[in-house]
Image (cartoon, rainbow, N blue to C red; front, side):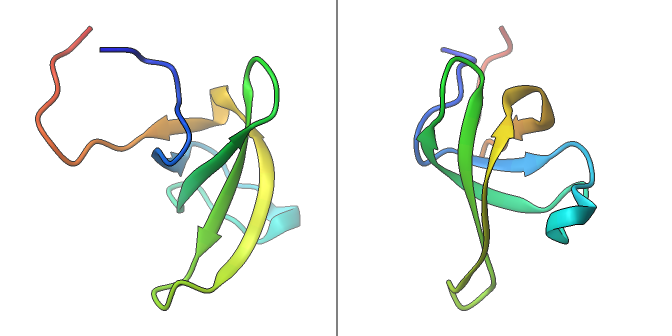
Amino acid sequence: MTNKIQDLDVVALLRDIPEEGLIKGQVGTVVDQLGESAYEVEFCDNNGKAYAMLGILEEDLIVLHYSQAEAA
């Protein structure tokens, strides 16, 4: 199992980004890789309407797992 963030991974913020109106724990989807350690993440409401899309460093994200995964 790889720990590298992939396109379409569901991620959560590890810190607030107040200038974008985002708080720690908000969930988004990775839509693109922006270099070695940055990702374009889209945040949507419950109706699927995007309310934010921005580049975020890998260190500020955690991948969420919805099925059993083995520890590294």
